Amino acid sequence: MAPTVRSCCNNQDPKTMHAFTVTYNSESHCQVLLQCWGSVWPRVLPYCVINMLLSVVLQYLQAQDGINFRVTDKGHSYLTMLVAFLVVSRATVSLGRYNQVRNSVMSIYCNTRQLMHQMTVFSSDNINQSGKQWRHDVAYLAMLELRSVMAVIDYQSDGIPAWDHPEFDEKIVARLKSQLFVGEANLKFAHHTNYSEYEENMRVPIRMALRLREKIVEQRKQLDKPFSWAEESQLLGSIDKIMAGYYGIRAFLTTPFPFPLVQMSRTFLFFYLFTVPFALLGDVSQPVAHCVVVFFLTYGFMGMEYVSIELDDPFGSDSNDFDNGRMAQVSYEDTYTTIVDIDGEEWTDKLRQKMDAGKFAEEIPKEAEAWLHRSVEV
Image 1: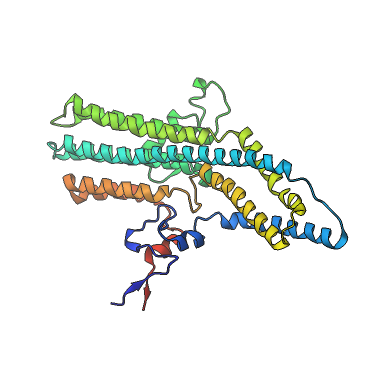
Image 2 (image 1 turned 180 degrees about the vertical axis):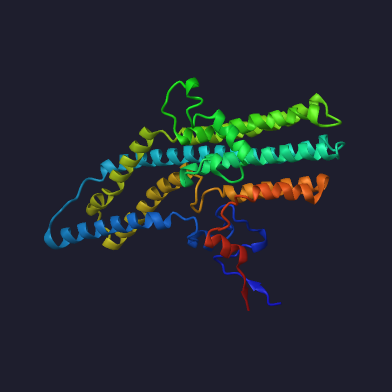
């Protein structure tokens, strides 16, 4: 078999890579500098070019026609500090929000697995039909809980509410709609009548968590050998943690970065960057040096702003977004392997067929696919 080699710009071992988000090798300077996948270069480059061309035009007019647009650079000296503070502060806050919502997402995945493990261990004495059916129902509801959270996250991009996803069977959909403000039945309990599908979609994980709690408590009657109240409390505690993660995601989605700060920082940013060419007219350096300074100043400040924009919205289909669908599929697979150990392939297939009714998109970014399968034979 021919050896595998990798260029200096793509030298990460495919066996260690994943496609949940942008991947890179921090030890490779060449790769970090030149990789376009997940980079802000494509979005920032037009601003750099425009500002550099503005600098060229101003210098040409000053040299050829004697038209002088020069402004003092003292104002820019003070403005640089203010703009840098605003841009860096915005990026810092955005990174904090990004990490917080990332922890909330991972908490949901972690505690869903924890719930499945606890359920199988505590009910392992019940290997008859009723025990298998109870585990099947709990596993299915737990997976729907996870699916409903993903539906809330993805609603802004695909516009599909949870109850329209095919993983939800007809009985569950009917019960959900009877409990939500999507029809006339429950409007008598409403405090206002301006309910949107987006708002009602956010209620679905809450209703599914209630149904999951009810099913867990039903073990007292459904199982031949019910487990103790302490063990039941551990299962209910896992659901509490799942919901804590969901409420963290919901807070992120409903509380965007404060608009006044975004508006102020962006106003100062654009004013500062596109007046830098005017301030440099009084400098005695060569025009090429001016262009280089303008280009990289624009890249630095505008690049930080676009980093903040990326961090503000980690959900969707952009390169740097979380791949919620693939991570949810991994959680489903972990549930299948847990169920197959105690109840066998028949019950695992029943569960898988219910969830396979609506598959997440199988496509992954072409850059991720290339990274996962890259090998060059020599």
